[in-house]
Image 1 (cartoon, rainbow, N blue to C red):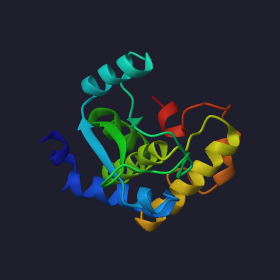
Image 2: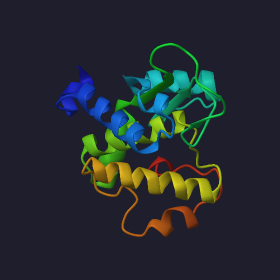
Image 3: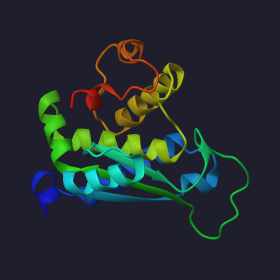
Length: 177
């Protein structure tokens, strides 16, 4: 109910963002039809998950829990499970998402779409642990968000985001917290 107070149709927004990410980034037919679970939680819930699974006792905007070991949209081997492939889960924290959107002067829906796309890319094996990976992931996010008619979340200079961060640093919108 709290997510519905800030977004018109949160489930539709999530489905749209996941679908757009899979359409652009899944490099195997079975992954293009994969399933992703999305938890729209609050800061308290995400803080507990973050503490339990990452050892960080704080809320964060998005968490991703992959079920498969993938490399940038490609499976390591053959996918043989019957039915749709289950990629994993993405979890968003309402208060953090709203706070970050307000601080950045962007609509909550645009920021939520970005975070669902970001989390889905993590499920597909993309990461931002080094500058090259961060640049590739951010470029892909920009393209997916453009498909969704969401403005570039990183701003007009694509090189500024990655060049100013050390490998493994959080994205600019995460570091502001």
